[in-house]
Length: 101
Image (cartoon, rainbow, N blue to C red):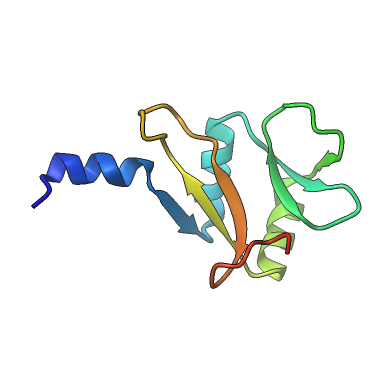
């Protein structure tokens, strides 16, 4: 049986899902992320200031309006297995399907 400490460590790098706006915003802002969409679409992304010419920054209000209207969930990871802060994230339809399919 796994120890509590080992189980907690495993849970820390596993992915999580949420629809909670505040959890999403805090997670993104803690990593210097900003709400964005792929230009000429409603495909949501978190922009981490890396050069991606096709991303357009939007307000959190616009971001969550799209998020809610498309009934999405935010799939994210807090830390990598090695313990470093993770930027892994993905928007998925409720039920598990990728958002941009």
